[in-house]
Length: 355
Image 1: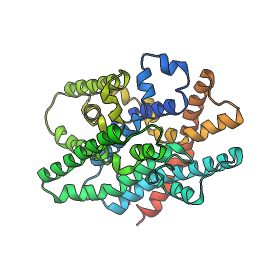
Image 2: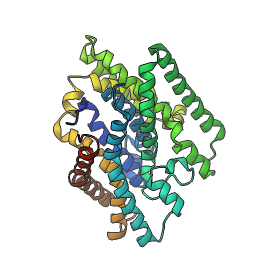
Image 3: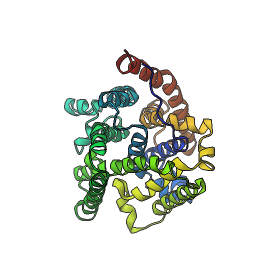
Image 4: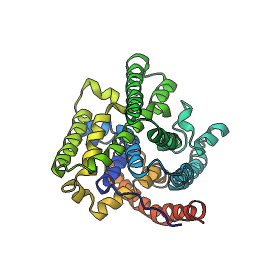
């Protein structure tokens, strides 16, 4: 049985690279004057919201590519084979490096939880081992819930499903407002991790992405001038930059879904634009950078540890940061070609598409 190729959203691939690199700057570059003094200093310093954008984009793309006839087993295996091999490899590399180079290792229980992608369910330990992988722990929760969402989307009247989805989104917004304004305290580490990393607190962002991804199909059937979607995408991008770059009260609520309207404008605009962004972001080299963005995201800490212990460069100087980024991109491309893609194809052929 041949693999069914999902519908491709050209203009939404390269932005994944931008988001991944923004996270890299947040993790390893904010001590540099450039990222604090530049015009986009606010965006860099609050770039962690890029992970929330990933959650929305995940729901958006999955909803666009999968319909209610999708086999839950096939879907879950495809996502597992797509993400888990690199997840597991980077986990062991970081674990071994931390243990032998720094004498640092999690407890056996939390090591197992981390290896299984459950670390975000345990506040205080969400950032153990390969710390950026906390978001994959959240994604795994989304993937388990996705077949249920698809089933509800098929079985429920559309108006009832919309009410349920909007209720989830509104409750998510209320939860985060209460958490940020009335519960959060800077010195309470476990509480901070609970608010920021607990998977159900990001569920509303994923559901919002799902709604927009399904809406795309009906919008494509309408004869709407593509230039309108170019404008919507542009306004969404400007809105994102303004909210994150300029000091304002609302910015504190953006991490757990506060930017859902902006995410929706950007994703819908880019998905349906046929002229400007689709042409620019659809350029093959840029699209390839988007394709290796997951590898970049997962390898950022292992590559940093190489710089830290092999080159004795921590924190990174401006020149070393540039070298670090170049090395990370090249290594991620190599890992994508020689490990991620071959392993995914091998596992898929043997366990999903085998007769």
